[in-house]
Amino acid sequence: MRKFLLRLQLLLVLLPILGSAAAAEDFVPIPSLSGHVIDQVHMLDDQQRAALNSVLAEYETRTGSQIAVLLMASTAPEAIEQYSIRVAEAWKLGRKGVDDGVILVVAKDNPKALRRLRIEAGRGVQGSLTDAQSKRILEDVIAPHFRQNDFYGGLAAGVSAIAGLLDQEKLPAAQRHAQPAQDDSGGWVTLIVVLVFLFIFFAMLLKSRRNARNNLNSNDWGHSTGAGVIIGSILEQVVRNAASGRSGGFPSSGGFSGGSSGGDSFSGGGGTFDGGGASGDW
Image (cartoon, rainbow, N blue to C red; front, side):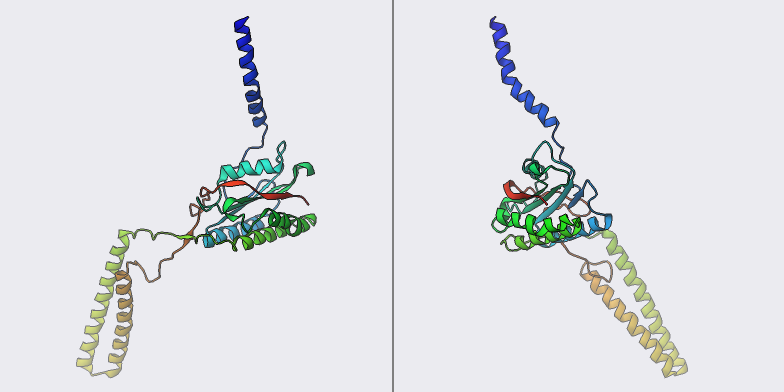
């Protein structure tokens, strides 16, 4: 009897845990963070998605803040608030310590009871992107477009409104990329180019002097001297570029980065969320 009672108590303790685990299996999984715009239900065409993604990537480059858009079918059985905070905890948008990430979630097929629109605001931007402002963006900016099936127009207007409010925050500036180390092969290329131009320059200079001495032809001298001046100016530019650490005649490009890892990849920067934001419908 004692063993039976112990097993019964153990079962009673484990039942809530097992029930929670079973329920968790029914939850909609969190998609991987593959870009600023994740469209699982094709609410946007390829051109619209690329345009919106480009705008958000440029905004992150300029400011360091991260805004992402998730377009999905449904969050059921969870309400959109519970699902979006799980997304926020998984993606960790925004810079660590700055917490300037924002997620706009659209659950197209959610029942009205679970809501279909959600703005999840990071801790660091809630001074300007307040719950009330988030609610206003959902109801007054995005929803009117969505009711006309203008999903791209609604998202573009909503993202613009969010970015405008984030710009009011006194957030740290985006960090500049460290300049990549120069390839040693560039130095060899520069040296070869310099030697070639030196050879051509002195060859033409000797030819021009020989022609002037033998033929006393001022026109030939003028043409050869002009060519020498042009080559000399090119040589001077190449030498200057070599001295400045460049391998060619064009300036190297700089850039800025936020929490993104750069290139075609995209990842959160370690930002935190605490449930701030608002939900809505259309």
